[in-house]
Length: 282
Image (cartoon, rainbow, N blue to C red; front, side, top):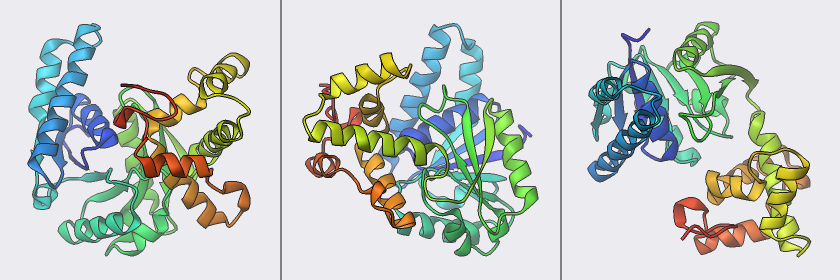
């Protein structure tokens, strides 16, 4: 399978991580974004990420160089035309993703189109494509080079052959594929993000500080990282977007986003990527 060319759309944290893992796993990797500076930054971060593996003796220097040689970048979507599988990792904006899927569907009649969406409907994305049976969810987790899970989400239109190919790819990337239905939030985020949201309510109500919440869950529930530190790692804007998808998808008040979470996002306190979230990283 390593002879196939794999495309990655988007150079955010997830897109960078996916491209790094794909290239390190022996695949020719095409990374697309709209701006050269974003691609240059992503390429530099991938080089650093692989360099850390070399310094920890988890990868040979020659293998790192080979992985970087397999990675190419482009601001032209047409560069993905010969990809066997294209993994979309654009921001969680339904209109943006639907436009990308329309364009990608028109670009290639053969490629499987996989979305890394953390909560949006795959059935809705598939519906805008010429070949909806070739659309599937492939939800990685951050940090992609470390975490082994990939949720494989079948849209109503997804074919068995498409699911099988994505499961095969996940295995080739050193990941474990877990099949999940196309329901808002899928499995992990439907469980995880409401817990983060409830932790935000604890802080808002003055019941506990962010440090206290995180320490309590680490010591009392054996979590390796507290929920608010995890929210900062994920990005508070991403957490809020997922809560809004859950609230809209289920219409249940238990998914109401915490007002404090909304205010923090409005203030630009997004977590690690902005230097400040529930904790300070400056």
